[in-house]
Amino acid sequence: MQTIGERLEEARKRKGISIREAAEATKIRSDYLHKFESNQFDLNLAEIYTRGFLRSYAQFLRLPVEKILNDYAALGRSESRQRSPSREIYGRMDVSVASGDEHAADKSPGGEDASSPASDPVKRHTGLNRSGSSLPTGPSISPLWIFRGGIALATMVVLLLLFWAGKAIIGSGDDAGRKATNGAPAAVAANESTISLIAVNSVRVKVTRKNDDGSPGEVLLPDTTLAKGEIRTVRKPGPILIWATEGKNLQIEISGKRYPMPFEGYNRAQIN
Image (cartoon, rainbow, N blue to C red; front, side, top):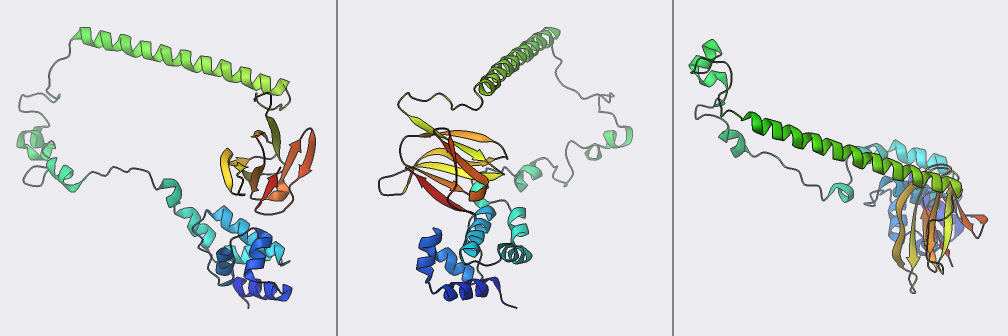
């Protein structure tokens, strides 16, 4: 039975095109396509992008997309990538772990916890401190300080409740404004136009300004997942680039008219 890479390579050669030509047609890097045809699927990308590239390449070669994706899933890569957190996402997380010295400091020279009843024969046999009481010893707290602490705590609770109430009122006002305008664009400069992204089905999108050399510029909408039916309005200060993991699940509304994305699967489009 042919591997995924063998089927991709054979289909490409049947079309009579090179890896470079396929990369230009699909807007997928040539080294990614070479890895796919060599059955190497570790692109150091999020799993959704690897699957999107593989889907787009299979569609371009007119291969059965679902069969290719099912065979890819059977390799077990999707599951392993989901179990291990992405280094790109969690690489800056600081984790504090108590050192062995800190644990050792809590123990007596004999290896027992200095605070445990086993380290004191009186506590071990009676459950009492040497003072004759089972209650912990320590400095007494003045009732005045307890009263002041209670007042401070109550004040903090009241302030938090007022903050949450104000936030809820403002949020409901914003929701009402959005419903009243039926999804109208957010306030922008008078001389700046906007477009609306409409999710026909769940899709992940990103929008950037297009630089003069064709490269992505200012991020206008960071990598965002839109649920089915969700509409997101984005500034259009000039030519922009729109990425989508599933082009068929996204439509663009410009000046009141809707247009489908000019591709299926993962790719990007330019809006002038």
